[in-house]
Amino acid sequence: MQTKSLWTESVPQTEFSALTNYFDVDVAIVGGGITGLTAAILLQRAGKHVAVIDNAQIAKGESGYTTAHLTQVLDNRYHQLISDFGEDQARLVAASKRAAIDCIEALTADYRIACGFEHVPGFLYSENDTAGDLAQEAEAMGKVKISAELLPAAPLPFKTKQAIRIDNQGQFHPRQYMLALAAEIVRKDGHIFEHTRVTHVEDGTPCRVEFDRGHITARHVIIAANVPVTNWLFLNTKISAYRTYALGAKLRTPLQPGLYWDTADPYHYIRTYRDPSEGDILIVGGEDHKTGTKEDTVTCFEKLELYARAHFDIGAVPYYWSGQIIKPLDGLPYIGLNSLSKHVYVSTGYNGNGMTFGTLGAMLLTDLILERPSEWAALYTATRLHPLASIGNFIAENKDVPLHMIGDRLAHGDVQTTDEIQPNEGKLISVEGHKVAAYRDAEGSLHACSAVCPHMGGIVHWNSAESSWDCPCHGSRFTAQGKMTNGPAVSDLKPVSVPEPAAAR
Image (cartoon, rainbow, N blue to C red; front, side, top):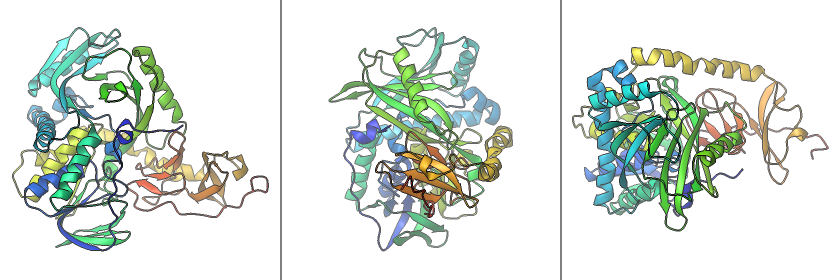
C-alpha cells in the first residue's frame, strides 16, 4: 500500500544543500526535527552560531509522522510516576510539559507562525468498566497540579463509561511550525544542511562531527535524531523502538475539538485537523508493536480503519502513515550529556509524546549549554538508571535482543529461492549460510543486501506496508534497497550478489 502523512503532503518540500566541506560553529545539531530546530532557535536567541544537519530533509523525519498532540498527559500515567519517582518529581514532570506547550505557543506568537496552534481540552476515557483506574489517575493529576475533572463520559459519538477532562492542552500543524522555525534560523545566519549523514562524533575541545562529505567542529554537539547514533551500549539498552500507525479520514459529522486517548489495549489516540481545502480530517492513531517484529503491517492500518469506521462518521481515507516511538525504561526521556562526554548532548525516549518532550529537550539542552540552572536537569539526565522504575522493563525489553541476534541467524529464510519473491515484495533468504534481505521492485529487478544490521548485528525484517527493512533489536530502518533511514545505524545494508534461477531472470 502507499503511505503518506497528512503533514508532509500539505506543506511544500524543503531544498537545503548538503554539507560538502569543513565548517565551524558554536553548536552543531544533528537532527532537523522538533528538538533540533527548537534548540537552534533558542540558542540563536542567546547569541550562538548554530548549524542543523539532517540525514534526509528537515521536519520530515519522525517529526513529520506524528499526530501532534501537545499534552501533559503521559502514556505511563501519573499515579505510576508518583509511585516510581515520588510526588515532587512527578510534579516537576507536569510542570516541564506545561512549559514546553507554553514555549511552542510563545514561539508561534513571536514569529507569527500560521500553524493552527490552539488550546483544546484533553480527554482520557474508557469504553469499559475501568472507573477505578480513571479515578486514581484523576486524583494523581490533581496532586501534580494538573487541572483534571472526572466526567461520566467523554464528548464522543459513541458510548463511553467515564472520562477525565484535562484543560489547556494543545494541537497544531507540526511541519508548518517547524519550517517557520527553519526559515527564522536561516534568516538569522544559522545554517541548515540536508541529505548529510553523520558517520562519527568525537567529543573534545572542540568537538568534531564527521559526515559522509565533510565535517564540522563545534564547542558543543546536540544529537537530536530520534535515536542517538553516538551511544551503542549505555543508552541503546535503555530505550526500545516501537512502530505506531495513524490515518487521516474525511470527517462527515463534526467532532468536538480536543485530544482523546482511550484505555484499550492496544490503545487509540484521536484528534481533528481543519484542512483549508478538504475540511475536517479525523486523525486516529494506534496499533503499536515493537519495530521489526511484524511483517504484515498492512493489517495494522486495516484494523485502525475498521476502528475508525465503527466509531466515527467518516468518508474517504486519503492519509495513512506510521512513526517510530522510542520508549524509555522508566517512562521519562533521556536528556542531557551523553555517557562519558563533556560537550556532546542527547535527547531521546519521548514515549509517544514527541512534540511536547521534544520541545522540552531543546529547552533543557539550551540551559545546559548556556550553563543556566534548571530544576529539570537531574530528573531527565541521560545517564540515569532508576532501579524501581527501570529494572523490570530493562529485562522485558532486552530479553528479545539475543534471541534476534542468534535465533534469526539460525532460522530458515522466508523463501528458498529468489524466484519466489514477487514484485514489490521483500523476503529473507539464506545464501551460503548468510541471511540476505532480497527485494524485487515493480519492474522485476532484484535488489539484495546483507540482512545484518550494521548497528549491532541484528537481522532485519520486512515491513510490507512501508516497503522497508526494520531491525527488531534497536529499531534501525532501511529502504527496500538497503539505504539507512533511521538510526542508530549510521550506514546502509551491505549490497551482496545473489544468483537468480533462470525462471526468475
